[in-house]
Length: 148
View 1 (tube, helix red, strand yellow):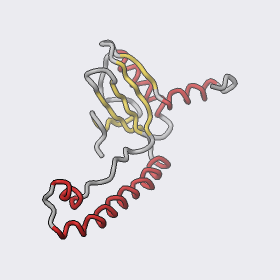
View 2 (tube, rainbow, N blue to C red):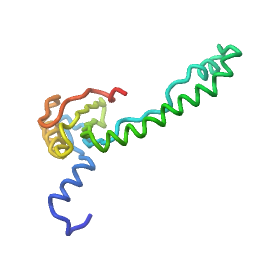
View 3 (tube, rainbow, N blue to C red):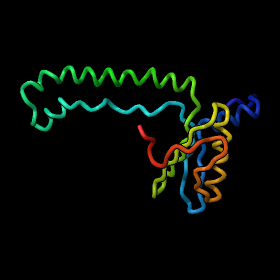
View 4 (cartoon, rainbow, N blue to C red):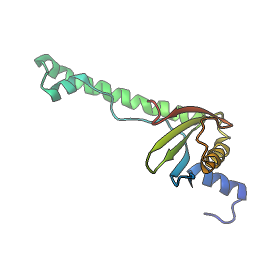
């Protein structure tokens, strides 16, 4: 890291990359900003699934290329949506307990500038053993993996 960089810039760069902390029980947590929504794999294709199970009719074989094309097209549309979300909407803040039992919590920052402060607040709460959904500057989204 550049030693000549201003202190505020260095702290912000560290916080955006993510932080690791421990709770009083010894669990290791990773807290980080996430600017892009989750983009999963290709959506399901019923015609191709029918071929896999052996319950396909002869006509289903003709539908497989169209179903695969439609699945791919739907998947490719997610990328411009993800780019628009990253450019205009505030980030998610993910806190994941890496040790067992695994816990995942997600918040949505209220604006694009409060992310580092929300991360600091979450780290302080985890270190004190307070696993609450209420964090100043963010709205709680969910426990577990974010709904897709």
